[in-house]
Image (tube, rainbow, N blue to C red):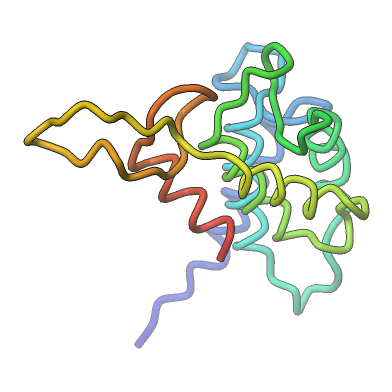
Length: 160
């Protein structure tokens, strides 16, 4: 017998929605500036838990999706700090979150974001290191640094 936890899921959805700012989520309660990472995580949680049998996607996501889209630079990537300082992990998380709400994302936002992610790669280092292969290239945390496992994993998930 599978326990029915729908009331708990609904309670958590309401709690998460109540903690949102006007444009997104901050890293912790009391902060007013929305950031990419907590907004993407919240949208992922809410989108995956939304029961589509209750109807179409609710309007709650619109301002948060618009917030993420507003952070898109000419290269297609998102930055919530200074232009050009892109965190590839959060950009990939945002791509995953935006795919949860396809009808609410403006045309061109996701393809441009995917193009920006596909065009990025970590710096290849020619120095020999017996502990790791510095020739492998995935996604870096930020431009002009070498590849890391976490941003590469999120980049691959976003591309899937």
